[in-house]
Length: 168
Image (cartoon, rainbow, N blue to C red; front, side, top):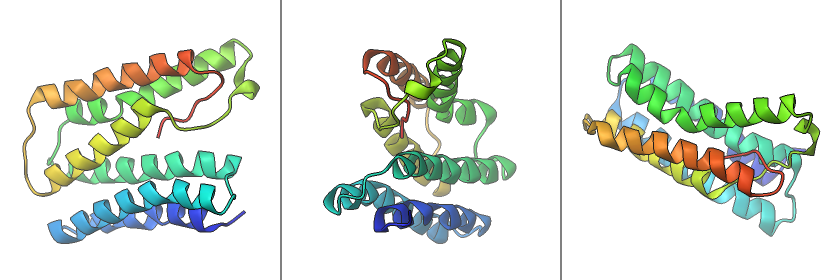
């Protein structure tokens, strides 16, 4: 079902392609708009009582799509390196490990998709690091190591909370 909140989530897909423009201003605009839509889509879903499983999957999927496209473009331009990409994707790697574990254990169908604290924090830091990369800020290695640590915190949080898997 297409709702206001799902539409706000979907906007992040075309915003990702603004990264094909080499203009830092356009890229910053895309990141800021992606951050705003990510912040308000859940609010509108709750306010309009249109929270759905589709929305719970669509929101983090669009976050990931935006970040992956931006990272691929920045990597192709040599603006970021492989370590930085792997660090920024560590939460998603942890989520995949969790999903594989649930699949192997036969508990895949029992997963309820919803946001978790460390997933939200990681997404916010990803957006901040993307903004810094766009304007040429070089972050020290330990900032990216923090992302790896947060990815593992998200992984552990998945096991502590009953039946959930989305970490955006």
